[in-house]
Structures are given as C-alpha cells and as structure tokens.
Length: 245
Image (tube, rainbow, N blue to C red; front, side):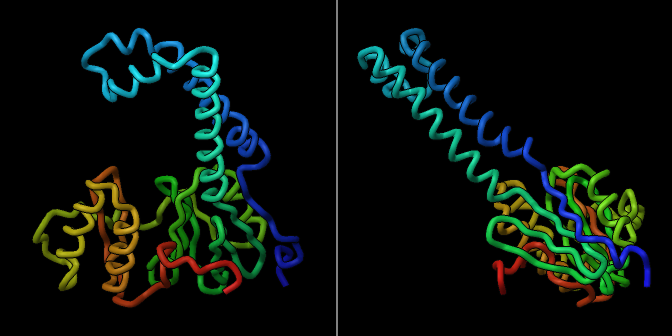
C-alpha cells in the first residue's frame, strides 16, 4: 500500500485571512463608500449629468448627522451582504488517497482517484480529467496553485502544472470543420451567453457540449475547443449535487 494511503485528508481553503478580508474588509469599504457619498452629495447635487440626480438631491436635503449615519449603515450592510455571498461561494477542496471533494455553499460533489487521470489548475479553474481526456470537474477558484498541488501530490494523485491538452485546443469560429453535429449551434448560443454574462447558461451549455465530446477552454469571451469520445467523462461543476445527496 502506498504511503499516501496513510496520510490524513488535506483541506485546502482560503484560510482565516480570507474570512477576515470578507467580514472585515468589505463592511469597512462599504462604510467608507457610504461616508464618502454623504460627504459629497452637496457637490454631486449641483452636477446635472450625475446619474440618479433626484436621489442625490433628496439625500442632500436630509438633516445631519442622521444622513451620514444612515449612509454609513447602508454601506456596512451592503458590505456584509457581499461578505456573506463570498463566504458561501468560496471553494473548499478536501483531498485524501481515494477521493477529492469539492464543496461550495450547500453543494458538494466527490470524484474518485481511480476515475481521475490528472488534475491541474488552469485559468483559475481546478480541473480533473479522466483517461479519455474528458473533464470530470471544472471548478473556478482563487486558491493558490501551490497549495492545491501539494494537497493532491501528498495523497498520490497525478498533478500537472498546466492543461496537458492545451496545444490541442482550436479557436472556435462558426462553421469550423471538425466539430460534432449540433456543437456549432451550442457554441454560438454559449458565445451569446458569455457576452451577456449569463453564467448559468454558460455552464449549462458547457455541459451539453461535453455530452457531444467537446471540451472547452475560455480566454475572455473567446472559446477554444478540443474533442474526446462522445459521452466520455462525468458531469462538470454545472451539475454539483446538494450536500448529503
């Protein structure tokens, strides 16, 4: 039995500092923005081109100090909301010798080491590929590559510093030969979704393309593709399961 089998599981997160930044930094930024708005309403109210001019002039007529205190309180509340969303959406990766589990908010999914050929971090996504080169998982993350690499390698997983298939990707343009039937229409729809920042549609269309054997890599709004056997691989992060299922 490999020595990695005896290691306790490794959890990779942003750590306490990430929570301090979320719950301390964002409320402070919100408070500062609220104070700045309250302090500048008199000047802003005199500018005819300022958006929401009626609201600015209404704020300028409010008495002090309640106006400033209210603006600061609203800013703090907005910062707390951002912190809550950020905390819920941060990725937690738990690795052991048999599986890796990805948890975000109340959703979690695990992937077996036996099903995974290689793992890597590319374009701020942690990706797991199977033996056919299809994606088992693609999860966006700001976790340091060095921490992820150390966790996977410590438990005997194959980890590479970049996508081993990067040279196989081709830039998508409409009607490009080599794509499976139906993939061109899906890529066009996904391009529109990227332009409109419809993230749920973008993930869903990636999943549909995966069923056709098309693996994607994005650079901004440009889509690059390669093919694998149709049906190879597992659902990507677009199909995360609720915790406990």
